[in-house]
Image (cartoon, rainbow, N blue to C red; front, top):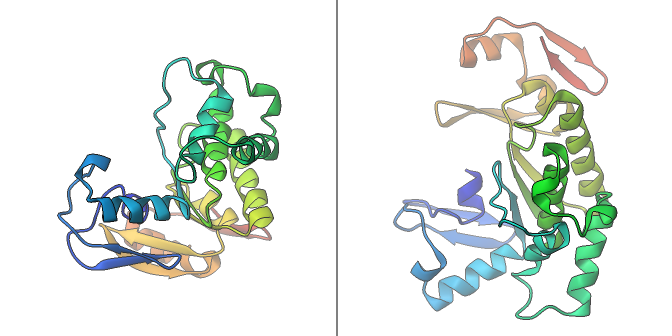
Length: 222
């Protein structure tokens, strides 16, 4: 779903509308930039200015510094870097507390720091929609909470719509305004966390016996 929203893959049929941009159905296969017509490439570039994807396993070129990696987020906006683009890059680093890491190699960072750098690159695109693919999968619970709290701060600061694919139901319930529960690839239900995350529904979808603890910051699945 996230790859389709980001137009990394094109659906076999139907259409998707994201922030006023229509993604037209196609062959359903993975595409490269070379496989797009000039008009399709322009649409893809326009969409990239609106939608940013933070992948679960980012591809980071060997030897790249933090600033260089975050600058890649400016690619949809420019042909050559300007002072404004460098300003956006530095602002993204500062927002996530990465200013002191700018000249360090990304390969030297911890898992949590890399997640922040990947998020900074996404912010450098100046999107209105931010897609997160399992943003906490490689992190311990402390760093997972830190990353999601950063996402909430950034969302509020920039007025973003955030769509995240997550397997941790407790974190999803605590940080999501709405939850869409998928069952065998189909939409089972969508709504507020307290309405969706019930013991009965989790037993039906996951075959798991759980207890739901209602907390002020959202339901906890135990």
